[in-house]
Length: 384
Image (tube, rainbow, N blue to C red; front, side, top):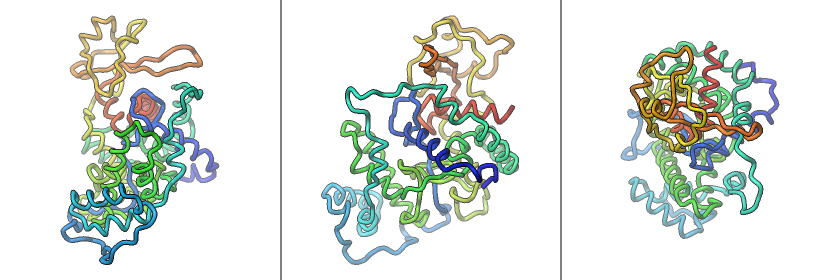
């Protein structure tokens, strides 16, 4: 833990984390929120050489599991049966975990949508940016990059993701590992799987139930301890805040000889895993996050609000876009691009930027234009 952060009030960390994770509650991309589908990690994770479900790493109850808590609900029993069948896990192992889960009120509170007619605070890019692109994270990020320069350089060489981008994600997610969350992940995932506070969001319920199934499977394989794993109220864990599915799929060890992956205490593993996640989601080595483009005076019609780049450079030119003064055409012009909007309600205006595929790779970590732009701006500050 860098001494830079040792004396900061806990309220600062909690405010930053809350504002970040509240974005996880919504799937539209251009909101100042962080999608719960983003990566998350916690305890040590075994490598492929570790035990698998066919050679279980954990003992499980052989006697019938007492029906209590969530396991008293028929839909939870049905879910446990389905997970056991589909994942080839002992039913008792699944049921025992679900029976120990407790309802997490904060998860419900933070995921509850505004009531009809209830005033909603407008999205404000300036307010959001100021939370993450500020002296504490900039100075802390520079210290983080200096302390972990070797691992960052190795990850950049292997994956093609710049060191300052990796550091910026970790800075935005957990303030360089200082705040990884203090909620039991089991409680968070079970609560949001079966008590999600918006019945119209079947997609969110399905997503959380899938994350819970991966979490149970990872526990059974001995790759994490579901009884002690702590994280955000949305179920994100570890230094890079990986969700269970991301941990299972994209977490990697920094040491090729290692028999485990630890995203809770091993910063190098977190660095490599962030880079691996971005490459798996479309990061193109050598491209900037934003193209040096001067957009036409009113580019609103060019914004489609999606999470994919759909416009060619020639299409943007036809719409009136030009190279920014002093800029030159780069490799980015060979790729599809997207125009994104960042609302500034206090100024009565909107900021527009031209995003490359690397911007949209960042939105796979967190499905928010605000989030990806904050990561890019913090990364630029770390490089300056």
